Image 1 (cartoon, rainbow, N blue to C red):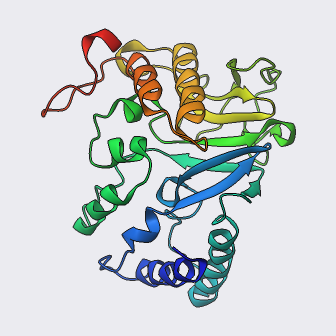
Image 2: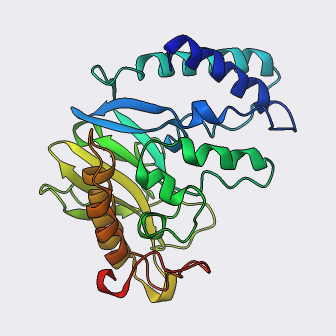
Length: 275
């Protein structure tokens, strides 16, 4: 797909965001691979998996037309600059969401995105909420970050920390090491319930996400950080590189599913040897 086609298709997406009928969503664009670089690590993922852009909320300001035009311009630049595999777009961070991309109650056409996805991991989760990859990774989203530029602080910092006067733990130093840096500020949450976790993946490439106590089937925040950190590490290593290794990814994801994960009514995603 040429860059011109990408931009024209994206204009259709933006136009549809202001309508109640989402039938004009361009599944071809959503399935398009984007090429970015975080902390000098080249990454490839479908546009629909980038939480920073396809899922932007509607504007509630008095200048909705102006907001839409500015959003279209910014996202047009993003699509243009992330289209070339040999020249990935350099970013300080990227928010990633892994979910059933083909499920949308407001638009049954979303299911058409699934066969268009180039990565096997993306197709595996697209219409299957019981997929091992989805059950192993954080339930919401996680950010891939440049750890050199990561700021630890209050709600104004990159890492959202509760202003409780407690010292913040240092960022992890070893690849594969996950640390709960601080208690996270979540409105309505209790003290010591939510925590900001960070893992170092390779060099200065890391990931930031939220864990909580009282997880599924009694999983503690520490256990969740360790398990999900390993899942993120494997996901970046096997799913987002220039060459995907789905077999290795799937084996790790099956071992790292959250406690109490259910199998699909249509059959188990993991056999007993890989759990």
